[in-house]
Image (tube, rainbow, N blue to C red; front, top):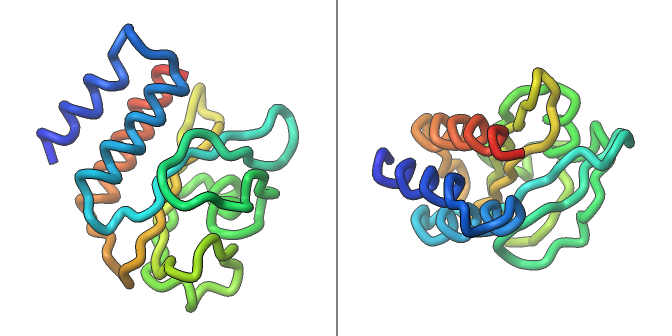
Length: 149
């Protein structure tokens, strides 16, 4: 994981790319390096509305470009301010289905100046694939991402 962190840091610190490009490169790297990350993307608070707006992502297209706070896993994280790991999405009553292939999801909030401004959302086609190491990596990543926003 330390090698992956180095590569993620070099993307985020690159002076050649704007923020949007950096976030897209982060999604691509995670998608390539972690086999069970099947959809990787960012959602951000949509202005002063209580909703999330889809940002850069890698994976199948999604209809969920706007997610109201409280709706689905992403919407719940926008309200709870806590990482949410869902080992099996079919066990979760408030799940917004993006793909019939999705079996598990992890959503980690991004904080800037104490405010929840967005999140990284990762779907997997495998039941219960996410490890403590994945969670730690993504929480570290979200902290690093907040520094460039």
